[in-house]
Image 1 (cartoon, rainbow, N blue to C red):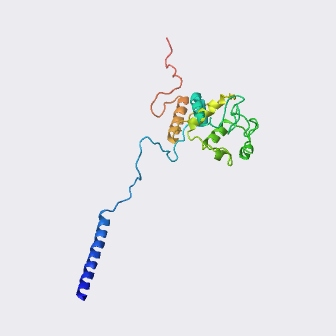
Image 2 (image 1 turned 90 degrees about the vertical axis):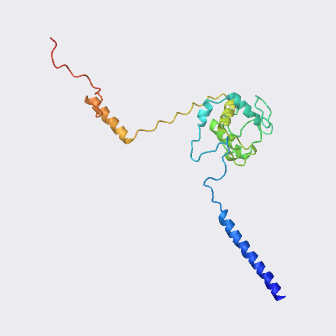
Image 3 (image 1 turned 180 degrees about the vertical axis):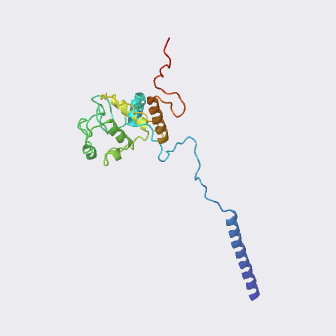
Length: 222
């Protein structure tokens, strides 16, 4: 009986050693290194580059806004707002002639939230852009449940269209293009030297002819 127990125990121990050894070998053989770049690139999906160009500013987008496209964007707002002159308030206020109006005032007695009534200021293009980006960030505590428009071009088109609905304020001019990169100090110094030599009538250091007046003739005309 004792020999049989010892035999079974020996085989069990041997099997355990084999299993442990197999696990160690497989872990070494199938070890995966962490890839340098995680995930897979999906074509057609744009990502924001950290610290990259944020795109055209609001003035530039408004200057080139597509009013017809803005009317289509308004379809997302039509469930809660009317925009015709004298239109009734709904879940949200009537938006006729809103651009340029005081924030949270008027609109046929619409019950604005305290967050909007205490905001102050007017519905400028900038304030409307901020509001349409995220109403909750513009006026924390607002009753507006709309999450916002993430596309700056859609916001500009919508603002431009709303402006045609009873407001008609002049749209801003496009932002000026960024200035070209300035010359290096070495290039600036060379340019200053050549300009000075040109004024003095001497030849520039690079061998180009001087830009001063022509030298007088050495002989008299006979």
